[in-house]
Length: 356
Image (tube, rainbow, N blue to C red; front, side, top):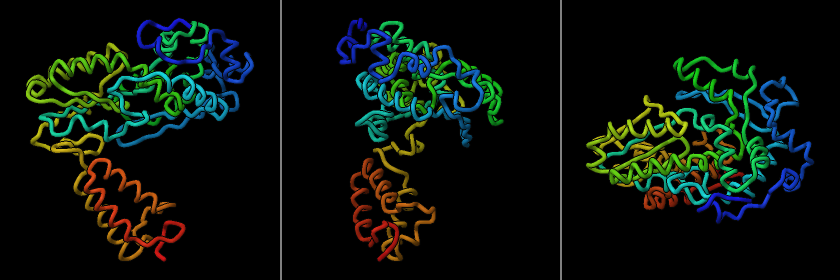
């Protein structure tokens, strides 16, 4: 193990200095390790069936088209072991709030409440933008020899089969379609693997460092939640926000990412400053209409029984309401207490769905 000088030298990682040691640590034979790591990228040419390590599903939302790459059970188990034994030991940048213990939407937005201007930017194809070369560099920085880093990278990255690329649903700008196909064709972090969120945070470390430094130069704050970039500040940022936007886009391109400029939002105090569904003008809070809707549901549950309000057919309506109340309480403790009092007045049966 020869970690890079500095913080990586303090990481307490397992000393896997040979491919045989890695195979033993994963409880595999060397041939099994080679098969699952797939450093020859056989997945890209494999026919549909048991020879593929992933299942694929295109998802279309109002905002974007995404490909879910879900590893099969055996590979997913190996990735979970890598996540717990390696990746959880490596700390991401402080600006990263997604996929981390002790971090949430609440911690993401807290630095941006009550600021003069809030800037919300969106990265295009976040996971596919992180290629295997960057993942390999991360493991090498942690101290693993090239042969071991190569296998670790193979276990955590994927290349899309050609027939899956051809099945992409129509829609989107032509340039976005071309860029997505190019990113998916090369080995990248698969969206759906348990290791991808942690690796994405770690591989974006230098990107976060540069953006945090740029924000500090303008007396601004910066946080990131996966592909959502959030900045906030006062007069200094407000005066130079357009030039600041150009700088962020340039840094993103230099770091291998791309800002979706059509989804850039510049929100001053005169408008509702909303990020990730949270209103930030004075303090973090849910939208008034959402709070009133939840309060009405709780009132009707107490009066007419929970069954009358479970219009979406939640299997455990009680847990669903408790989760929504907990989310409000995380952002606004007083509102959360009011809702909790209303929740406690509801009479539930053992199944958590109906009035006794």
